Image 1 (cartoon, rainbow over the protein chains, first blue to last red):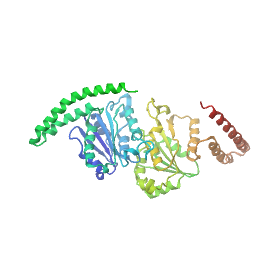
Image 2 (cartoon, each protein chain N blue to C red):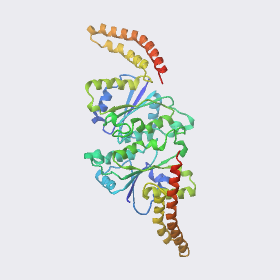
Image 3 (cartoon, each protein chain N blue to C red):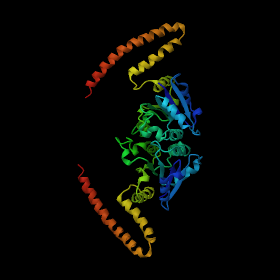
Length: 230
Length: 230
């Protein structure tokens, strides 16, 4: 899977959050592209990049509850009507559209009755409408709240969540998650010190064996829960 | 009432819709301000203009379901957090925030199951969230669909609807509407040819008299309807 990350941030170099994301990028399968407000876009080139991607991610901080101006500029320059839905051709059809959005407010602010009184999902309505118009598949938004208050463990977790958001096949099921980890484990084990490698390989083997058992258990559990749905 | 209209359109001079709105502006009480993408904003001056207004209108075409980049730029430059809600002071509190939005799609496209599958109200979530944060009063949005397909009668109606949206006290009740027309009728009659003036004055007198009767009837009707609400 090829993922294109389009980052819209007016002060990219000064953003510790965005620098963190950049350092957390998976080593393969992802093209990272920073949009600057000053830029003049080569629409044909941008469109070619979109065509090549299977998953397109808009990544930005919320500025008064919306994407920054640079994303709107990019959209106006690149997403011509002819390109998106002209002649009933939809070159972006079935590609996935995801959003990585950062906010300075805590998660609980974004709900009815919360400080912001509106959900992140509701604020994403314009981008969700774009996905709908382009016949794209909308991915659940990855919202990162108050990055600078995360502790080290939370930041490590965010690295994994971010990498999965960029490259793990959707939907985010246990099976897809396990397959994603299983793909990456051998490379991680290979980087271990020789003394630890045997332990690492044992973990990989055990995890692969348990995966089959777990899937059977999950299927049973899902059936029980469904019958319980009253 | 003082109204500030902030117009965000990347090609303002080429827009027949925006030129129509400009020509339709009420002669008094409205400050019209075009935002251009190239502009560097004097935040203090813009903030002073906001403080002086009772009603603030954002006027723009939908660009991929959101406001154009120039509005986002203006927001980022002018609406500093300190200004909007710093120190628990809300200088915009109780001012009205309205949106005049134009679209190239028909009204019925903007509903669940319609071509766009989303309401105009849902797309306005970011601006409504701003109004909420600033303790402003949100006005129902004035959406103008497919302006270039309106006939002459519809365009004349739009002039009145637009002027009322900019200057008529909210909410948009019959009483407020009548008072708004009554305020403007004498000046209109004064501009009539001398031969027509007597007729004009008769219309004004009749309308004023009927207004009292109408209000009594409306109150009775409202009571009947309320009892009928089952």
